[in-house]
Image 1 (cartoon, chains in turn blue, orange):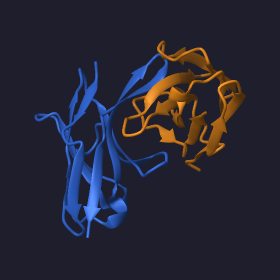
Image 2 (cartoon, rainbow over the protein chains, first blue to last red; image 1 turned 135 degrees about the vertical axis):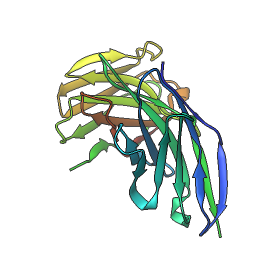
Image 3 (cartoon, rainbow over the protein chains, first blue to last red; image 1 turned 180 degrees about the horizontal axis):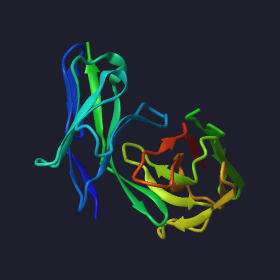
Image 4 (cartoon, rainbow over the protein chains, first blue to last red; image 1 turned 90 degrees about the vertical axis):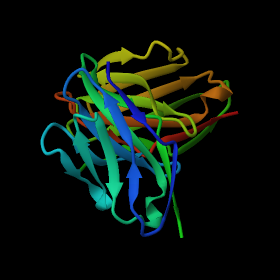
Length: 115
Length: 113
C-alpha cells in the first residue's frame, strides 16, 4: 500500500525567506510523487512531479523538490517566498490500478507568508 | 490545452432538489474522476471512470450518481442530498497508463440547505 505523510500541518514564513514543506512516503515499489497547490476555493494545480527520472525536480513558480529514496522523502522547497505562495499544499503518490490512477493524498500543509 | 472545465462554479440546492454537476476535458484522457473535498481536508475519491468503466468508492451514498456520456464528459447527478454533503466537488482527468498526474478542474462549491 502507498501512503504519504506531511509532517507539518501549518508552516509560516516571512516574505523573501526560504520555504520547506516536508513529505515522507511509503511505497512497495518506485513511486510517482507529486506536489499540488490549492488556493482558497480553487482546484488543485500541479506544481511538480517525480516519475523516476532526475531526482531533483523543478516545478512552476520557482518550486523544486528532491526525491531521496534512502530517506523516503520528497520535500518541497523554494528559495524565496512570495505573498502569492500562501495556499494549501498537498503531497501525493500515484498508484496504477485496474480503475485508473489512484492518487493518495497527504493531509496537506497550510503555508502562510507574512510581510 | 491542459484544462478541465467544471460547471457550475457554485450551486445551492434544497434537500428535495435534483441537480447535476458537469465536467469536460479535451486532453484525450481516458480516466476521469470525481472527488469530494471538505474544508481543511484533502480530496476524497468518489468515482473513477476508466475507459468508460465505473469504479466506485463503496462509502459514497447512492444519492450521488455518476454518468459518463463519452470519454470527454463526466456528470455527477445529485438527488435528495443532506446538509453534510455541502463541499467542494472536484473533477479530474488523467492518462490511463503509468502512474501519471491528474489534472483538476476549479471545482463546484455545493451548498445543501
